[in-house]
Length: 133
Image 1 (tube, rainbow, N blue to C red):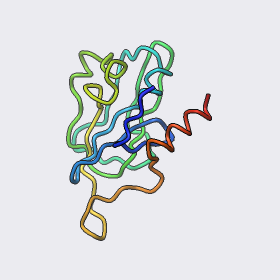
Image 2: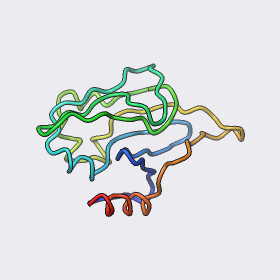
Image 3: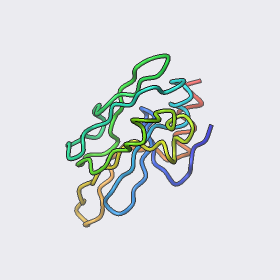
Image 4: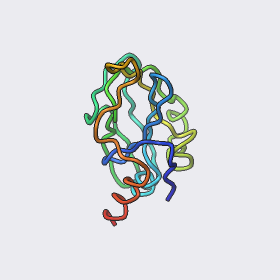
């Protein structure tokens, strides 16, 4: 299982990468493996407001349908339209071509993008998935 050190993670198995005030979001390799073959992804609409910890879409696999949670507050600026034609990218490249959506996150008091509390480091996420079995 791959857990890139430069990303942040949630207990719901999403990853987030922050560049400036934009967060790119997807599901982890662990989640993609647990789901099995992803056959459909329902993503939030561009310009939709998302709230950290709240469902904003769904991931459907041959095994089940799971909620997709946003790890950050903000406004959706882009969705990965390639997933419409090839949802298997989520399994093949969860941290690359299988990214799901991008969110412009509001600035915090210091003017920098505000990360919500509760995001996990790679080491913390690896510990979480070890204990999950």
